[in-house]
Image 1 (tube, one colour):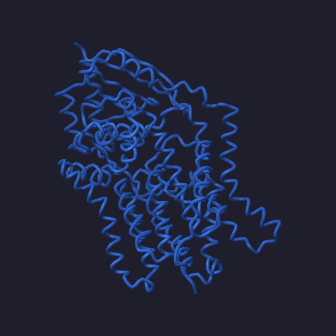
Image 2 (image 1 turned 120 degrees about the vertical axis):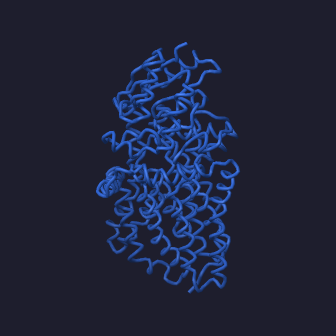
Length: 519
């Protein structure tokens, strides 16, 4: 039995693949290119980026239930090229391409060039072209693809630095999102699979765990230096565990889990079905693939075991949303490209048809792009009123004026390059989001009392000069003590100075109303 001493060099292939995959990313984004910033979470990402580069203290002066690391790519891009609404698309393009290259490189360790390129293309194509924003889960995919690459590499080649690199990237992913901590299982599994072949396995394992801890320790040290650790704990651990899912019963959590996977299967049926077939092919027939190569057999087993951390991440979303399963995309691409190996015993004509099946996971989204370019369903999208509202504020606001937006539209701040006078630009901890359709008492269980009290005091002591009320689908009146305080403030001390109604890109009615404090 043999194990390769070192990996072959394939720099020319990587460059060629990068060019093709970059072209695919550009093609798949064409239908939504004219929509601008339409996904509301992208506005939150931009706001936290603006807050960070403006010197505000995270969690203390800018509350967030997310780990801080996820804004790092946007902060770097803003430092290099300046802050603008285009940051989302620019960073998204780079990270999507980097994710695809990670999938390509991972597969290239195990399969030929065409299979590897197909795996990367399928990873990019899942649910496209109707992906409206750049979710945190896409950032995690960028890291998970390369964590898998270095973990597979360690299974194949006796190079200790590979598993340390995988562990370090897993630690970085953990600073992006709580659920990404499961990715440390990939290098740990690769270590387990090399037991007996690494004389320094225990030392390597300890070094890997230390590598994993480095990014988290650095982030905690940074927050500690700012005095932000108590608020960090409350907002990223205490709030999600105690308040965000407070009224969600076991049946609701189970239904949400079924819903997100049913939606994934509906939106990407070809990719999902072929990925399942590829998983079965590896589970059943991997011993027939390179039977004399111990390294590849370890790598195949790692691929199968990697389903555990990838499945674990969507399980802990409290209020499950469809984008939580985005973290599956790298594995979906890789297993889908391997699906024809389940049918190698078929007659040649049928085998050729089976080999073409995964291609449809890429071709169908491209056909949808072509259709949209002809029909132009979104090419003349007028916007939902944000641009007009921002234009009004830019014209009438003075430098000393303060602005608060009551509603989940942090892109208004980002467009104006202006920050909220309160830490609660994202009001999720003081006013439950619209997905919680419940009674006032039930909604109150989702509110963090300490932050609600702080907000009410700040609103009373320091009311903003301008207050923008955003309403989508007539849900602005959902009950909460914070909403009651805002409405009372508007009735007693503000005049309506601008209002515009619109329809968002999904056809849902929207309204922006601007109020100015009375002199």
